[in-house]
Length: 359
Image (cartoon, rainbow, N blue to C red; front, side, top):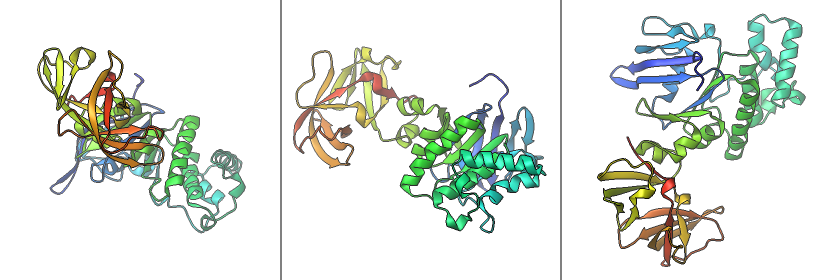
């Protein structure tokens, strides 16, 4: 992150509703122009955090600053309409009795922008979101993806200091969601609005974000780039929530880490610090190689038995049992790497892709 003053700074903020604490002593810094997603399951506090940033909820503890100025605190909060922010909701909330152009121009009219400037900005944003040919249509005449673009255009045309998005793609079908993920990222790369995006969909967060804050029980478990979150999760929760994984426990014994049914040389693990004791690793299914013959010397090969399989089109999903243990590992392989249930196979482990869980 940049060392300049954060655009948004959330400092030890909490929010309670009666006896229920939705957000607990949360800290978050967001740089100008950064795209940060709040990712987590229902009830983790991500939408409550977004609503505190927007000014719809006041924190019960802590402060929120924008460009160094306090905008939210337990004693006083700046009203939402004075924060210079735009927010897009799940329902889009576009006016059915207005055309596309009128919907997009609505916020500019409230700000008393001159007619020529208003037309210039509306035409520009409609061209950017590829809706210029539909400017005179009404929302009922648009597809779900086109309605979402109208909501994005309306939010961005006022050039907000912060753009807030609350599960904006949840009402779209799977193919449209995938398309709109890239559209949102494209628009961010063009305009560089500071953006806070709430979602429970890890795919959306991975595609759109500069950084992702994974939330659980009102706290941030880890905030990092999508690549770091996936390859180096720090907690058991993050490892399991971001994609599929195997959580494998081992015991450091001298020069070896002993797992259930097999051992690997400890010297190959750069991130393992304890001289002895138990360690936990996150191992992604696609990072485990699957072979019919024993790998070459120097490769971490482990004999296993193939227990189950499922064909998913792009991959085979296998369940394998290494050694004589009761351990079961998920392994992903390309469609042409076909094995049968009951086959004796060899697993190839790459210690560089085995992430130690440290928290």
